[in-house]
Amino acid sequence: MIECKNIIKVGIADMNIVKKPDIIRTSGLGSCVGVVIFDQSKEIAGLAHIMLPDSSLAKAGSLNIAKYADTALKDLVSKLIHNGARAYSLKAKIAGGAQMFHFSSGSDIMRIGPRNVEAVKTELSALKISIIAEDVGGNSGRTIEFDPQTCLLHIRTVNKGVREI
Image: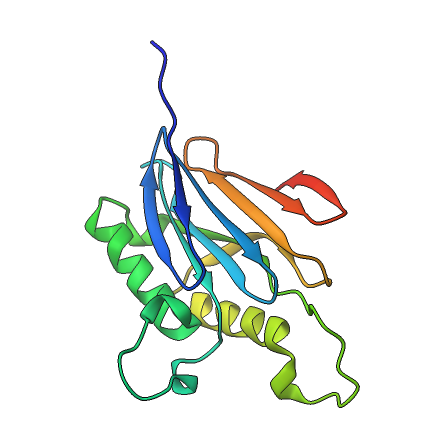
């Protein structure tokens, strides 16, 4: 039997979940971090495209919870569990968090990529989800694609080719 795979796209400051045979993808990871959380035996995965480390940076008004590490990952885990994933078997793979521009001031505020990575790691630790693979840092953009059936994260990095983790 031939299975048709659909590609579920996740935009910037967005999240979604996918079950086999479908694949989930996000593009445009610069300083943003792509976080894949998955349950291997249930063949289900979620992807969040994290833009900023902390929702306290949000302006007044409506809050896009998918935009911030502290709000997106909790919600993504809830969605996964609601759709059949088991909390104790969740694992994560992360990519992105580049320092896209060089600033001579050395200000911590401009280190968005590294701050995003730190926030994602802190939040995953609080949720007791281990990171089993990562491709973070550098100064190049990335596109990532995850297949919940193989649990491979394909990473296409600008000027550096493709790798799988």
